[in-house]
Image: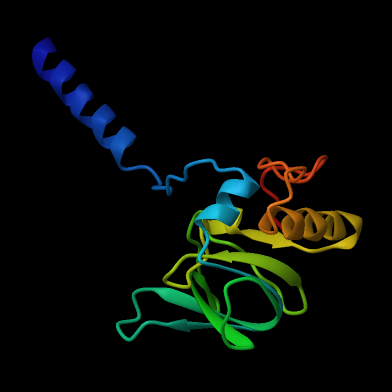
Length: 164
């Protein structure tokens, strides 16, 4: 009988451990590594955030419309729509871990993969705000230009990852 209880307990313990909330795995990178790995880097303002159901109504996606002020790396159109998993439709909310968050009116630097998806989830977005935003842009331009004084770690006194 005790062998049975031990086996049953082990089963339930395993079930509880492996059925918890799933989260994405990200490799920590420096700002310089993100620059090097990005196909495009844009500076733009969020002009629209629109969430919708997929055709099967099993997932919510959000389209983020960005008015591009500047291509810091690469080139392309003056407006871009990023499709991000998760969002709110009516009273239904679907949250997806490790996705960047955007609000209308915010000014961002966004690092993009060749697929034009945000590179590294929230690590691929830097919200430009105040003096920190200006310092980040100065460092970024210097790093892209190959200035040896521009550290791969990013500008001094800035966090490695800045989430909104």
